[in-house]
Image (cartoon, rainbow, N blue to C red; front, side, top):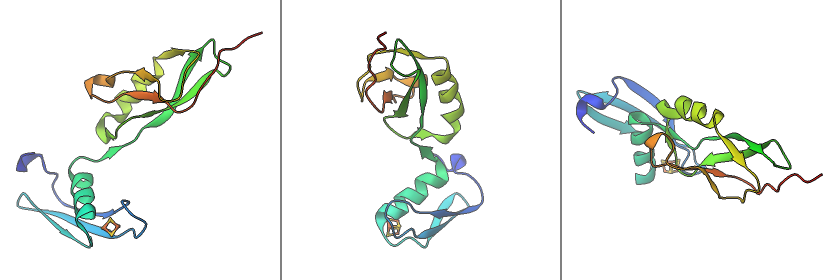
Length: 129
Ligand code: SF4
């Protein structure tokens, strides 16, 4: 990433990599990131990425046809950039899956071209009368 893509300003970021929960102060000083408060390399990497390009695992539900339940819980198989979460949710809202579904099945492959899949978080059997 070039210096011009690094956000301006500073931010206090709570590291969630381990239960210690260090508060890391991250500041962009003339294009160079200065970090204070972390106590290990993993925390430094987490805070740096969270400052530059925060990502989140997305969890939500997808509608299901022929299923024992009308919805199935799903999640992204990798963290999604925070600025793409809204578009990803729109894509998911337009998707209808077909039962039966196995936990881990890919219900949306390569969502929005992000090379991230949306996968089922549980099994779902078909509805039978
Ligand atoms: S900086 Fe290191 S020790 Fe502190 S919370 Fe993050 S991972 Fe844990």
